[in-house]
Length: 185
Image 1 (cartoon, rainbow, N blue to C red):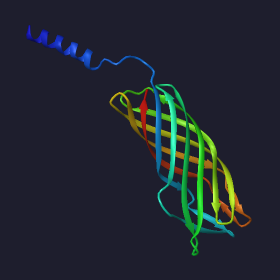
Image 2 (image 1 turned 60 degrees about the vertical axis):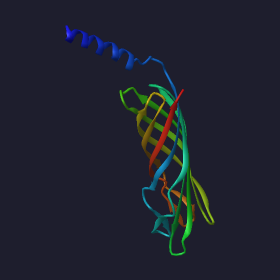
Image 3 (image 1 turned 45 degrees about the vertical axis):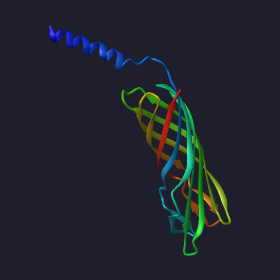
Image 4 (image 1 turned 60 degrees about the horizontal axis):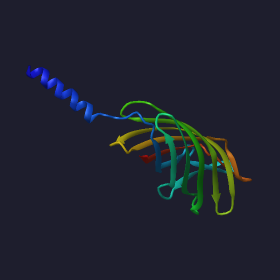
């Protein structure tokens, strides 16, 4: 008798505690880059590779909007400053990308996978050039209560080598780690 009443109490308490209506929430996500690394880590001047040195951590932000368990759209902006050669010349890499992604319906985590298209602008003290790039990314999110979550992501940028000047080539391929926070409505 005690066992049956305990099971009934346990069953009813699960109904109240884990009652989760099946609704589609709109999520807004805001994030920032933690690390941005050019894959080559060099700039090619007069057929010689010169190392790039990071000045500071990357600046930037990302904004994503999605429907729960469906798809979403987003925008990423990343700015990374470098110095190169003995004169400490400056190189600024500024990336702007528009994204489309899908959300996988996995319990307890939010898995996003997406593609993006945009450009990276490379600017030195005397030259400016744009490189068309594609991005693919994966983000994993952990929910916080019912109203949002924290996400970490890995982004890969792919593009063709571009001329910064007549004697300078740079490769726009890069990778990025990001963190974001989402809120549902």
